[in-house]
Amino acid sequence: MQKLKSFIIECKRVLKVTKKPTGEEFKTIIKVSLLGALLFGAIGFTIFIIKELLI
Image (cartoon, rainbow, N blue to C red; front, side, top):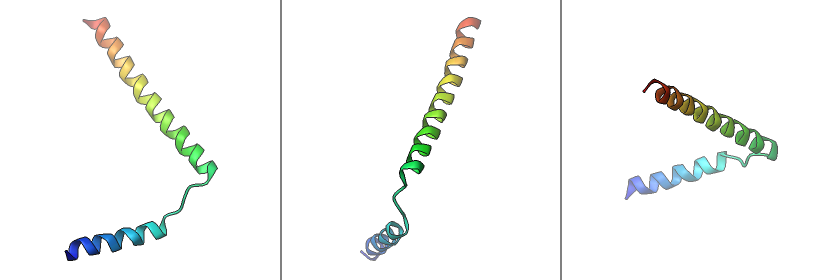
């Protein structure tokens, strides 16, 4: 029971420290996430095409 209470107190402390991102920060996060997803997709697609051409 003490561990649960300690965990809840710790969560409340963390939530007090965090802040909501501004609109500009949010847009930057979205752009970077999309760029990363596109990059990984392109790498995967390239590997797939190379594999298909070799077999």
